[in-house]
Amino acid sequence: MQALDKITLKEMSDELIATHGSAKAALIPILNKLRKNNVTIDATTLTTLAQTLRIAPSAIYGVVSFYSFLDHRPKGKHVIRVCQTMSCKMAGAAKVATALKSELGIEFGETTGDGLFTLEHTNCLGLCSEAPAMLLNETAHIKIDAVNVKDILKSIARATPVASN
Image (tube, rainbow, N blue to C red; front, side):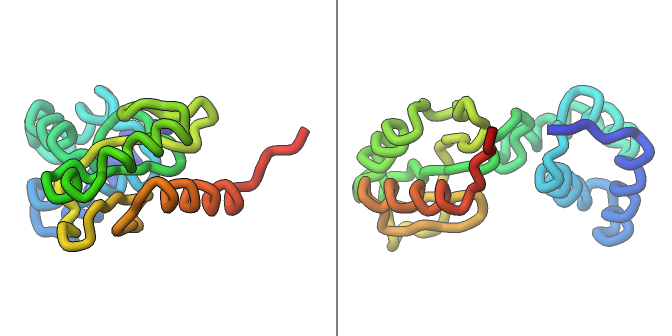
């Protein structure tokens, strides 16, 4: 993850404020753009953003910490979010979670040592009729099971170049 300088952050914020009409309305789009650009939402970024938007840093932190997609902690290249609602649990989300942990060798809330995967729980994905469901980055996977998990992870491994010595 990277940090943005104050000038770049201000320019980006001004652009999004012009699009969304107010600082408060632009907050989530700004935070989302930061996330998509792999920018660390650290104390410096929060303070600069608060000054630029004239919003209390605690209010910005509240938004960042509430929405799992805006989480300020470093993430892997691929973020896997498993739905933890009742419909997904009843359809086998626990088995999917166990398969993911086993295949990746990490627990939920952790990132693989190579920085390739982060594993997280998430609340409802709106795919209850297709349970269990998970997101891989921004792509939904539905009616998944332990076999699907292995296939999905293998397809990512094939698509990810391996560094040569």
